[in-house]
Length: 161
Image 1 (tube, rainbow, N blue to C red):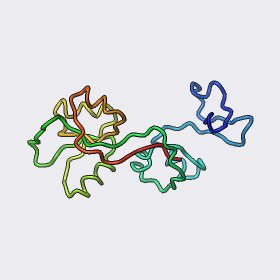
Image 2: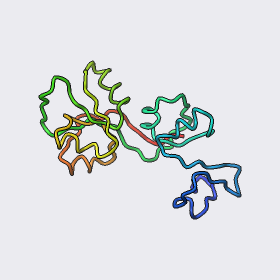
Image 3: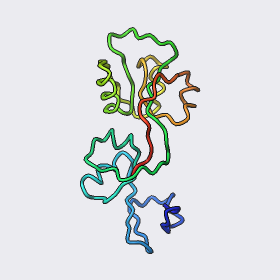
Image 4: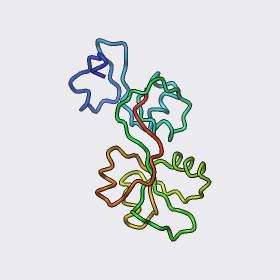
């Protein structure tokens, strides 16, 4: 925001305030959790929001993407342990993105059992909770350090406004 010319207070990154009015600007900043941004915009509490494409897709809110800001680029990937063979009649897939994962497998004509998790998704195949994961990947380092491999890159993600 500073690079865009906004004169933000020095405490912008550390404040616990959730609404910031800027003296030198007619704009008011609402500091919301990324997952909630599309909801604030859809219901008119905010005129514009900034969130990742993953958040926008998963929320399924009626919002318009005006611009791809081209920052925080990453992708949604399907990953599993190397050479994993499922013993289940349906693949068990752990994910923080059940809507995105469901759409992905539906398009492939595969029936899966989705297990919704909120963090450390990589643990699921390691401890036997799931056969694989659908998760956001930036560098792939977390997958690698936990013995997982990408099976497929599904969707490119970046921050949108």
